[in-house]
Length: 640
Image (cartoon, rainbow, N blue to C red):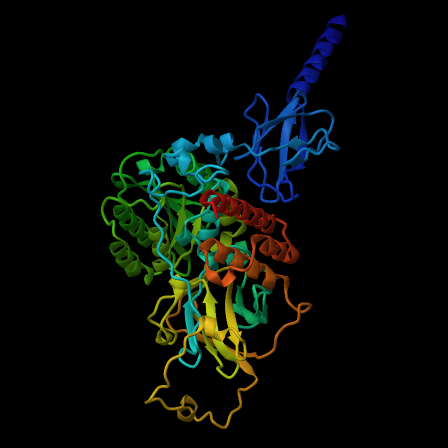
């Protein structure tokens, strides 16, 4: 009997010890800057362990630690690493400056040295000199604030040149025609520059991609069309003499279980240029998120290219996630970049496994540094254009810095009937691969294009903000052979026009007149419209689109009355989109907003911040404030 009691006692002690070993508690909190704006991307580590997490876009973190844990370590680029003692609290908030009323909060102070030496990338930290090749290329307060892209062979990023749209006179140019754009790469890329302590190059700023990074609170369609069109006209925030018009559409949202089966080919760059922690490792983490979303009816193939191209995973069902993830884990970087051979092989594999009425798509992930094989943009375009009409689309995901080829990546996505996004950290991967899963992968309408006709009775001049690389000829609108943008499941598209009304006293500042035309006749006479009265219309919106499996376009027409919305009637999305556009114009150095400061733009964004469960709006406000600081540093550096 005593023997049995002894064994029982020993067993109880062992159970208690095991429970103590594995016991854990959960610490939560948020990280803020001095203005109480959240800070995403802060690394939180249980000291002395590999137990780590990163704050989300809403600044929040959750970390399970052992009961014996005594310290948390918080680190963020540009801040001094701080250690905070864990006492009995389960919530620890973080502030940029010391608040003596909150002794247990983590205090972060700007640290130029750490900003110069260290960059947080994904889940890891890496020396800036390794990432960029030149520490002094980065703009720091009191140091060299001008980003010198030619100072290092590694800092050779390519961007297509952009000439911002000017005001046009509707008497001479009544039609504005452009292709929709749901690409969002520019915003994430700008964030990468700002988080690394420097302003982005001018041509990296595509305002339409900044505006469309955010999902606005538009309602989905209720008619037979795959989207609903919205418009609002009000006084322009940065020029009270002008109007600002928002034209937008919202695509129908298809539930994940109702999406057609997918035939996906991951085309992955594993060349030597991808050998850094913010490239191939982040790429693999991003695709693992996507793999986790796949269903049994979906299938994945993996093609890689470096010095040569090859298949590393034959078509595999989405329910065999372990096999797909193991194939990703085996990848390593090295060699030159045979991008053209990789594209050819990926298209061949996609066609061999083509799913009728399904989603057949190549997902190209690279830094865009194609240097072997089909290397010119023209050759790449011809290859992609020859395949897209067969129903195989191309989505492009960009990674990395230093040698990033944005211009090439954007062209490939545009020509491949797909979208283009840039992944600068794990949170952006989560947004693209999980939160926007359907929109990223499934097209609900293709060749979507707008054409707006402005009424010269009320409009002296107009200007499309952004979309410079998406402009079309007026005759392209009715030409179904012309390629245009695609809309994915649940996508929103927003465009802004600045309008000069007749009677504005600053018309001559923006428009230059011409001599009267000698040979023209009235268009209204030709169309027998003389008896009709359109005096109450400011403009007419026209939209053309094709369903994914059709070759003939559908037309939508929406007249816009010459009526301004009151401030009380304006949607929050109107002013928020305007604040994003103004920020983009300031980044590009456009004269149209020269009299508006970053503080004013920040106030617009704060006033109009939409429902922000994921924290993207709060993050943008923080980035505008960072832009303001960096801009002032450059002015001081120049001695202005």
